[in-house]
Image 1 (tube, rainbow, N blue to C red):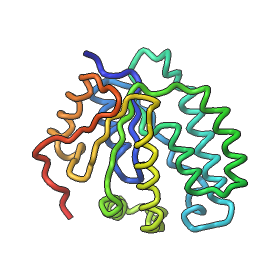
Image 2 (cartoon, rainbow, N blue to C red):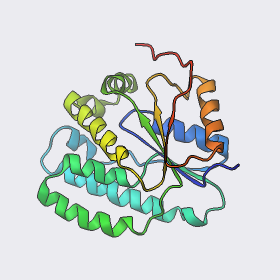
Image 3 (cartoon, rainbow, N blue to C red):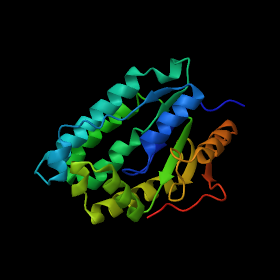
Image 4 (cartoon, rainbow, N blue to C red):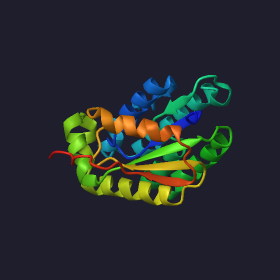
Length: 215
């Protein structure tokens, strides 16, 4: 069996999307696609500046569309591993934008989404808000320090709701609370072995014997 051609990895902030995407792409000799985190409007958004949420969201929307469109995924000879799905943009838009802004946003989103390919497999990484808070602190990015506990909980709930109804592609759900794909090679090896087997519908990846994340 061969792994899926187009894999996308998704989940809330600091759940480990980019690190896992990089590792999976390296091992599968795939082409990585990384979300552009250099959004010039994020600082203003986290600081609560009026209008910054809409500007940040539209920047992400256009950048994500441009990258996925230019990647020519459907005709690529090598597999592709992305650390986001296009739908995440709308997920955050509905958290952060008001009704009038959403009306404008939706018209652009619907037009762009229909032009993009759908992943063969989505890997959804889960973690509790408490675990994500510890990882945000370890990463120590100044703008992310302004993320409130309430907002972090809202993001986690939005992801849980979104993926509980997700049917666009096959879905592998991974609870990362007790996993470390970067530091523990056996976790990564077990996941890679799982990717060789076909994932049909929604499946859960819960390896046995993984030690709990240290405080």
